View 1 (tube, rainbow, N blue to C red):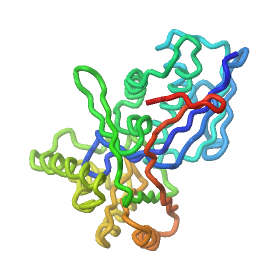
View 2: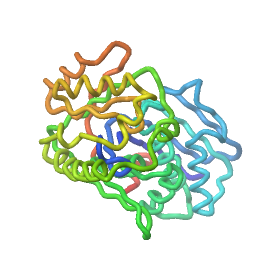
View 3: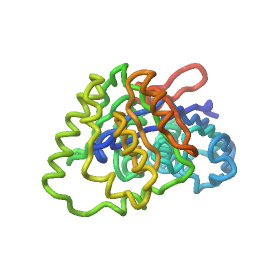
View 4: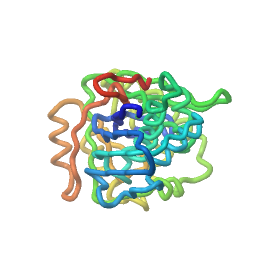
Length: 303
């Protein structure tokens, strides 16, 4: 039997204000999964977040992603054991589904005895097909600030180093929100002026995150946050409260979590004081590496 492999995948926050569906930030908050071939059948073990709630059969998203990758590779293992230790909250806008898809696909690629190495371009393409858009999966795979795009040639992504002064803080409510519901509230057509505004702010966002300056201006948005207020009024109220106090706050992904791009410990503490009861405050670092795959003591490159 092939030796088990471990896949470590980071949480992500997408959009980052203006960069809807094209930018994501990898966060040092991880799910860790072990994949092993077994003689027959399927065994799924879940600990941490989602224990007792997530399915433990073939409907589990990690298993579905693993099997999709196996089909891509033309490989059928005799049986599969998946052991997941989850720390990423589900349904909160922190990229839990992207992390699951990336983990399953990387697990299959790393376990398959018929391939020598993970193909990062093929993994990005397949995970994007499963997620529907590349922003979260690209950040999960590559780490740091990741920009992603689609073209006639397929899906592309590149990552940049975030300035050391930037300190992400994620504020997580008890409530969940489905991405499908949140996206369903967006209009089909937007004014030209709003599109131009967001294009300019998206360009500024890259400068702000890599320089540690102009974060308030760079995180302004007109395309998607206000349009989804009905689905998460408490989140938008918290964004307004934080921004009024001078903090670069945005809805994290599809919500309902809120991401604050703080600079320095003083801002992190101030954000905590402004956060209402019932919300968890997660001061995090940027994960510069993205998903990592290891077998025993050896690391298998996923980039």
